[in-house]
Length: 402
Image (cartoon, rainbow, N blue to C red; front, side, top):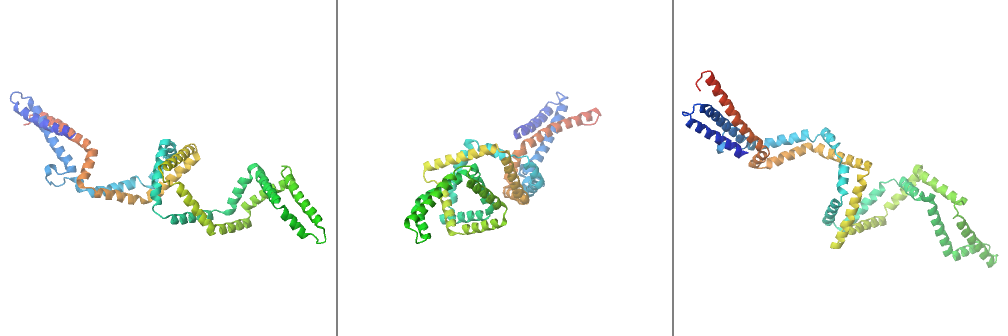
């Protein structure tokens, strides 16, 4: 565009010279000469104006030229303030972020196997670098402490009620009750001699030994038969156990006394050194599984992670409620992170601009808007020529010397 605009200036100057050279032979060329003269003047004036924005014309330090390099810092400050006030306010961010579907976009992107594989590959490559920042012992203590704090922060009674309700809810607790009966029957079978000895030790000494044995066998037989009878779904004791457990689950959720006992038990468990050590060991075991040492293990881990990530993306894409939760998180994170720091962001933009070389700033801006500015030169050439031609024609029309 510079070549076009400059070429037009040269053409107008050549036309002016040529028209003046042939003016005696063709008087009508006076109109062409007037057009070319005014166009040359307009082209020169607009060239000076456009050039003065970015540099000193012809290298001459004429006042009020090189405007952009000279005001670089002020432009940076104005740009930073403009971004902060017109893009990063809470109202504008809320309006723009409400239109974003971050959750659905992320899910659609992640469910693509190629994208999931790239994420998995980078995670596997990044994990060893992160782990190298600390020692295994420090990580073990950290994982144990975090897990213990997480457990301590969860109310014990509602959690226990939920877990017990979920387990007991399978077939009305029948499977668990049958398993308990199996364990009890096995314990009786393993300890028959002990039970007979206990019975013999608690009866009257004057009773014959064979009577003690008969009593012990009768007790064992009665217990075994009772256990077998309780396997029947209609057995009354079975219903009593189910009723008791259901009532206990309800009390766990509502009884303050039970809640206090559950919290006390939880505190004793969480504060036990063995639990912290085992939690740390679990963390180290997970860490080892995510820190492969061979290429084959790395590829296997990448494939597993890619499968999990792609599966998670596919699940999330179809879960409108979960997507909305992710969208809310993204909006809140952006608002809480960006809006309160918009002035800092504006100052950061200004500092970046201030750090640029003045010539670089001029070149960057000229590359963005330079083509339009060259059109200004072209338009100035043509408009100047038309205005000059009009003035010349009017002067001739009214008999004024041209």
